[in-house]
Image (cartoon, rainbow, N blue to C red; front, side):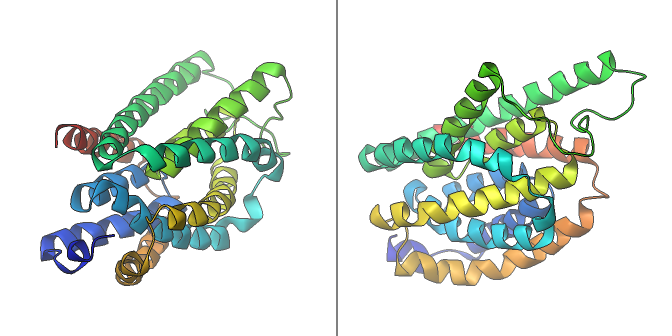
Length: 274
């Protein structure tokens, strides 16, 4: 990271990064979609490549808080099924970062944000159609599994779906720290209830993000200067996580997702035309 970037942040730029750090904590304990807003803010304030290195330690701090909050609700069979494909995606993302310049990374982040926004809209509409089709039956969309947890996917199609989501999630999380929407879509399609969703995703991203650290250090994305900025911003992750824990059972999910999608689209377009 360029030292000039760290020491010449304006008050408004630091405030934007602080707000993004707060959203990191909130996304880890409440709504993962808020993470895309953090990504857009970091990439808008900092150089695109450097932004991924600064954001990663903050994500790990949020992951630790999420694991402490929801550790009893993780579904490990799902995690073991995803990890090999995710590892392949991380390697592909690392190779891309080795060859991509700052402009290419910024464009990729913008395109990924717009793609994830489109995926989120598609997911909501599909869930609404399923809800209308299942009107009169017990349970809610995304919470159809029984007490034993999410449905076990053992078919060929299920394995292909898990591998596809895993590779895409690994690539997007390595290139842009944007694997959250991909994994959210997969976990919801697997029938996770809210706490199971949060617990499984918490362990998933703690393990995946921690495994990305050596790659990021090797690529020069994490260094002493970026960690110094992280030390100032991590103070905002904890209140965000506490706010998310309080809000998870109270938040109006539909309104918040509308706001997240709108902010994601604006951030993605801004990165593409910057």
